[in-house]
Length: 260
Image 1 (cartoon, rainbow, N blue to C red):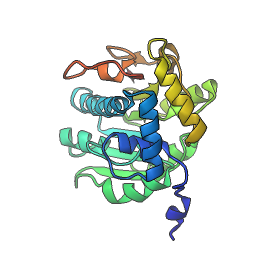
Image 2 (image 1 turned 180 degrees about the horizontal axis):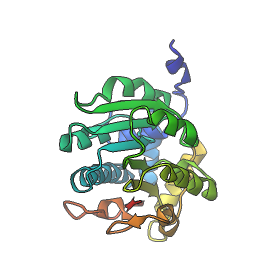
Image 3 (image 1 turned 135 degrees about the vertical axis):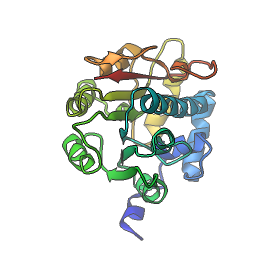
């Protein structure tokens, strides 16, 4: 057994693998599918959230590459590789785009090295690190990215795993402070909302049975991550409502894009 394999716990459901299951992937285990089905019973629309978040990522990356000229992306909490990963979307627009992925899930690590292969003109890299390891992430990312030039910081569904509010805001500020003017923050977050009470039940089930535990925040609290940045239209909204190609129902996953 390799060191990576020894770190993979198949006895408890894991968020990255459940997310993979909901989006039609195959990198999951029976325990993940069982938990995913139970959560879907509590909140039938949960699978749409995962898809909405993924589509939001694609639209945001495409916008930044096409309209803002961003050629560097730091994607923290990337999750398991699937269709239209950040580097694939960015390098379709600009083949010389560079992407650094960061995650601390051993299963993601096992797959990322084999699957996250970019264009010859561009470059992709992967770091095995926790979101809280800000200094290490920046130091390692600087070997691939030029941090004196604009970077898109991608934090899709990852700050939900930092329970303390102020710690989570501080992490995002430290990361953005290290990036050049013209950099952008792309962030999404599970929300608690009075119009979506079944979401709270699904999160409670997850936190009792799954790993790692997650924290919901209100839409207003999610908007605080963009303090000090120029928040692009339409602001912090349901991921399905951020510049969609086609109208879609709101989901309890909110996101936004801000410019430094």
